[in-house]
Image (cartoon, rainbow, N blue to C red):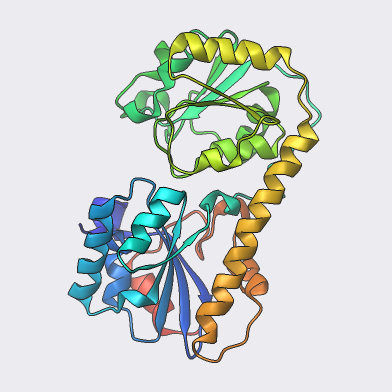
Length: 326
């Protein structure tokens, strides 16, 4: 699978963590989707790969074959897995992997509770795709609907039309992170309806804002690791069950600071594991560096764990970054 079938113009999320006797980079989506990175790789290069949410045993075999094609030692790839089954599958193929849920990289200094009056009983925010199942919220009253990944409502190319969901609010254009933080804080609950997710950034953003989550009992992908009786209600994936769960949540007294602090406690565990992984990889070259400092330097907050922030570098830019000191 060539990279430009996934990202436009052959671009890809890419981050420089360390340059020296060992070069360490972070990429998103798996090696198979980053052929241009492998193309310019040398034996000194190591990669931390944020694993695709929909990774299957077939994915791991493809990763091995892609590395073979470019003559890259797959032992130089370190995969971050979002949930236990994914971790066990990856490990069964003999690959380097860690159980580190990637949503710990959500910027917790940005997403936080604000002192505003609540306007909406529920918020659903997702791309208009079938596996997101936004229509499960159709019976929720006073609902805010955010259609993700759009520039304008007239240019939505999705599998479902989220305008058909009864709503008190729906966006007509792309919303900035600042605007999304406001909507999260204006909502009494966040409703995560998707069947599968890559650990679900929106769910983490809501928890950091002290907003309880309604999630589905059949959901997979890693987001469920953060849920407990103090921050969420899990219900069946039906419209009636979602409506009932929201009504139950509205009757319950939630501790917003506890919701946030519980999330931070778990996320910090995954963040510290990332620091340790960075140090372990570099120690192979007798390099002693502070993993936290290197991570912090590469991290771009709400723009993401990417050297170019929210943009995707092309092949020429990646080639230059891999060839030169940064």
